[in-house]
Image 1 (cartoon, rainbow, N blue to C red):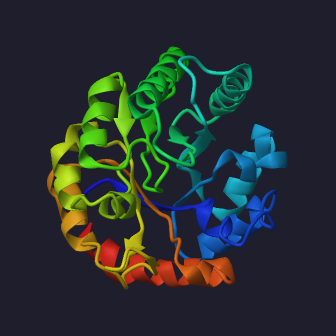
Image 2 (cartoon, rainbow, N blue to C red):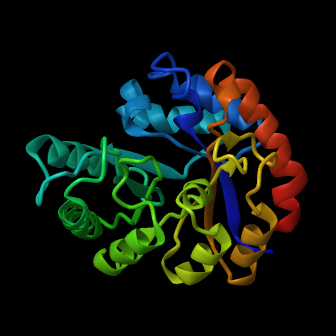
Length: 269
């Protein structure tokens, strides 16, 4: 059996707006009830749980692992801004208490793709520098490209530039939904860059490019999961549901996703 664990991302609770920020214990409770083994919070959700003692107490209460910590920044300049560097340092300090947790680097999409090559190189430069500092502390990093129109890494050519430019110490977190929305085949991308994959995000999409509830769209989760198992992947699958229903009922969406995980995904592991 593959050593694969399945966690839940907090973005589902970002769909309604800001109302769940600082309510990570509630999200943990729902996540645990849905049967997930871990949670991947984006840093803006953590707030008072930035105290590692309180975070560990909450994780223990709900029987969860802090699988991944998601750091979202602009990284529009050749080097990190003072604010970006301070945020990275804060969360790397936090992660010394959670040595098994992956630091996930996600760029905030811009409004367009102007000055594309320059912006791509700036992101690569900033991420490489963060990863170098993280490695000195024993922290593993990964990069997560996304697919909005203003993302600078959203096509197959962009992925080539990204993964050839990032330091080999930085892993790759393919998001199968964003890959599909960028006009690529998720399974092919996972196979192509499998040696860099140290985390993976699962979300579903309809053929009209709208996000779908897990298992309702066109993403080949069975094929992707079998590829991970066959190639000996040992890491987290992170479920991140962005369907329209999450705007009004993120808890319910997550509980339904837990059924999909139990009935479909876990049978493939």
